[in-house]
Each structure stands twice: as C-alpha cells, then as structure tokens.
Length: 61
Length: 173
Ligand code: FES
Image (cartoon, helix red, strand yellow):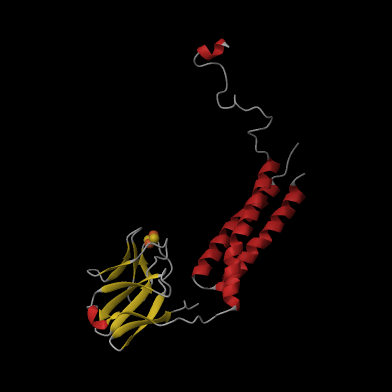
C-alpha cells in the first residue's frame, strides 16, 4: 500500500509556524507591543483546529 | 537458561525487554497525533502571554508611576553608578551619572536572560557578565552580545538636591 505523507508534511509546517508565533508573541510582549502579542497568540490558537482538521483528513490516506 | 552464560548471547539486546506489540513503533498516524498534540500545547502556552497583553491593552495604556527618590546628588560622583529598585522593590535598576547634570537610569535586568547589568566605568559601557552582553549607556540599546532589545529607560530628574525617578519610558514602536 502506498501511503500519502502529505499530512505529515503539513503538520510539520503547522508546528514550524507554532514555534515562530510563540517566539514572536513572547518577544513582542517584552517590547510592550501588546497588539502584536495578542495577534500572535490568536494565530497560535487558530493553528490547533487546523492541525486537528489536517489530521482527520489525512489519517486514512 | 544457559544463554545467559554465553557472551554475547544471541539476542537483540535493545528490544528483549519489550513486551507489547508495536511498543517501539511510531507509525505515521501516531506521529501525526503527536504533532496535533504539540500544536495544542503551543496554543495553550501562548494563552497567558496573550491574555496579559490583552488586559494591558484594555486598561492603563499610559501607566502611572510614582516618584521615588534615588540618592542625593552629592553622594554620587560623576562616572559612578548606583543600584536601586524601581518601580517596585523587585525591579532592580541602575543609575549612572555621566556628567555634572547628565544622568541615565535603566532597569538593569538584561534583556537576554535577565541577569543584572553592571556599569563598567573604564569602558563607559553597561555590561552583562552572563553572556557578555553590552549596552550603550546613552540609549540603553544593545551594542554586542546576545541581547536584542534595549534596556527600559527610567526617566529621572533632580529635585532639591536629590535624584528622583519619575517613570519608565515606553518603547517606541
Ligand atoms: S543574560 Fe545578559 S547576555 Fe545573557
């Protein structure tokens, strides 16, 4: 059976973005740029449902 | 059981204590599950930062700072530095007298990993000994080493022979 590794790659990309957004959020917090912090935190939150969605789509292919 | 007496005995040493099926196997689906879990973890871990930032945004945009006496002017010679705490007792800060009427004060927790920053008189520079971070004493911005963010500056003024801290400057964005 030939399997698709698209899900694996996509989830790696999601995790990569997670790392970037977390880093950015913390740094912008110390720069007292609170709007940016909130934006990055929200982006990070949004990534979780996306990851779940990718998992459900890709788990059986 | 005399295989224990033969060295090396004929067995895969790294897996002989695994009993469950697939105990050491991380398949594609298992890996994807781990990644989803990690995404969840990251999401949760940014929550506190986000929520503190949000409360910060809603309330006090311009924070009010109480004035605080630091030291008598004539107790601090030109070129000397004095450590104090501002705005709270837990925020250590450093006052440097650069000239007769020129003072600079910064919160002296290094912007890399929060080690205390010291005044290096000979080099006229602020130095963090932990990983050799250097800061410009005139502006507070990092000049060398790991720190990327300037030290937060404390505004000071002289009032009746005393140096008084009046507030913490915001970063310009
Ligand atoms: S803590 Fe100051 S340079 Fe690392």
